[in-house]
Length: 273
Image 1 (tube, rainbow, N blue to C red):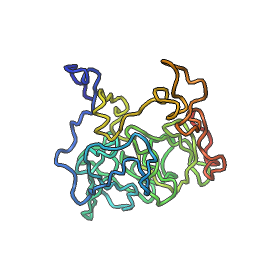
Image 2: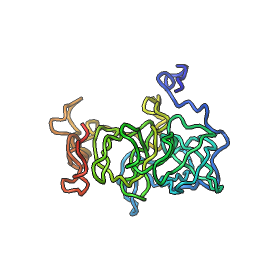
Image 3: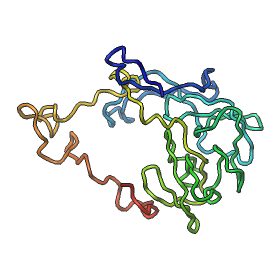
Image 4: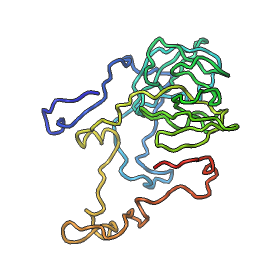
């Protein structure tokens, strides 16, 4: 992590990522595309996610979350920065010459060998297996919820799930949140903890850096008028006097948002705290 010298008020608390060791050649042109910035709006153009918009121009790297080239060895060519995600990505070249981007685990470096195995194999960082072949206590990431679907969970910087036990056709995993859930043993996962674990400690330092990331100002409800927000109004600083609410009157804190009858609820053995 890089700590800046306090030469201006914005720099005083600012920290950032240390990009040493990352490839400086730029992304592979055949594996990038441009995404339209929707600024928090849905297909009808209506605002559905507040405080979004603007931000620096960036190109999307097409990341292979499935890694479905089974039993084909690959060599890591470079570790690169990805503006669309907190973890680093790795450019890998398969034995047949195909190039793909994958999520880079901590410790992976250029020149290393990885592989997606059909059965058991060498338990090396970055290799991919079915969950039923991964030993108890192993840290994994980029986990499929349904076989062949591609990794859906544990994809952010520094995160990893722990394999606890196998029970029938399911494998128990302890998530980064502390939740313990069952996932089908036929689902695939990659070995290791994801890269850039210091991302959580980054201090943006100034408002402009939030705007570069596409985050617009977040105004407190208590600073508004009563017509604009349930928390608004009053002479001077006032307490809420009610449970926290959204601008539309829905409960905003301490309320369960998961559907009670969701089918996958039976796979959760212990909820996160």
